[in-house]
Image (cartoon, rainbow, N blue to C red):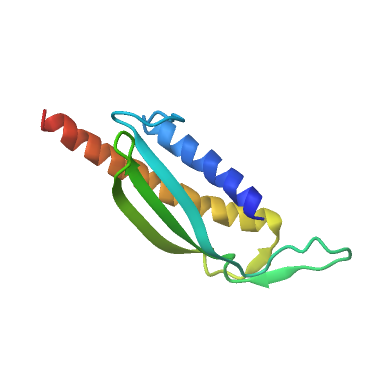
Length: 132
């Protein structure tokens, strides 16, 4: 589950940030923001155990997870910001939960986080451009 979530995290954040006009790089430098993310407190309400037989799990939410992210200056390595944001995944409507619905709920949370980060980066970039 952790590997799948890490892959989805990378996919969603890359998609949202590049669509927001942010370039993804693998090395630090001037004008580069180093993003060090972690998902902590991952709780899946009804994990899909993939056990044989006809079995279904129902719950009002898929679970919860917390984003812990540190942002560093790409040139100096100085920490710029630390983000901690717990989120519940789901819509409070009781429904079948399995690996597909759990990942869909996780993707919604990841997309929300990535969109918020992209918006803040745009605000900072606009302020930096205006001050020049």
